[in-house]
Image (cartoon, rainbow, N blue to C red):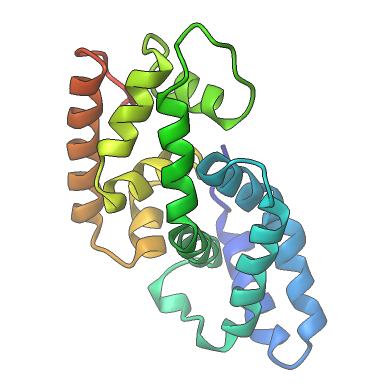
Length: 194
């Protein structure tokens, strides 16, 4: 999981965004700093196929929209995760097809990739088909919050910024997702308390 940046990094990120308006090459510093984090997040959401292209899309969107970045609304890190989540939204149909395919795989069939991380991080005792069906049954907003929490390593405030929703809504979505996943998994707690 990505560690939240400390105060000096946050200020530096804001400065990089502001200065990149006159010196676009400076934006590469943010790419270097956050590429791995966004890569992990997008790979967890969509699988590793084309993930480098999707991360590049997220950074291109950020680069093109850097003039609209408002440090009053949150950190650069949260802003980038919000953009990455929007990239996921554009690929939701593909994610749905992937979850459909996963739900048909038996629990005994070994699989490599992001599905294994979902299982180990969300519910060590759950079988994959049950977990996948549980994730698929979540409302998309609830699923976004779960993935930002688990794979992005974002806290509630950062998730709120990334999705442009109140912090209380984040808590409600986590609670609702936890209950639905617990039920789908036969009363196994799918997420550790934060």
